[in-house]
Image 1 (spheres, helix red, strand yellow):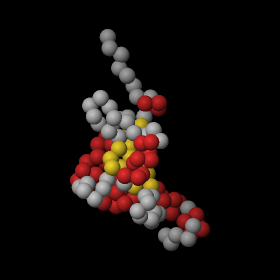
Image 2 (cartoon, one colour):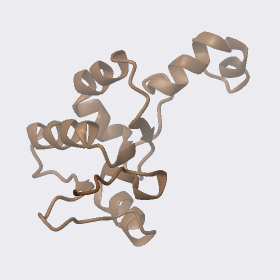
Image 3 (cartoon, rainbow, N blue to C red):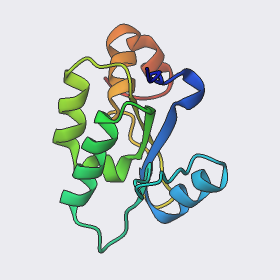
Length: 133
């Protein structure tokens, strides 16, 4: 009888989609993983990367059982906003999708789904940051 392996918290990984500097920093910090089949948990997005490829990688990371969190730069998330919003509308908690700032583009909290929830529940917190809701 073969014992089925369950994915524990120690086996969970973080997926990263972003510009070269962001992904390189995360990989150097230990987030990067390539399995035996060549599947990566990260994608470097540059000017030559098609939005279709970014969206396919995002969907793949969303459906993987070993991914607990997906970090995506806000610029990349803007390119596939429909897919990011559709995933948020499903109500799934794992993997959690977090939009992070990048060097090339300033962070806009009005586009971030997490900050939209903060604005909904705590509008005074957003106003104290100087953000109109």
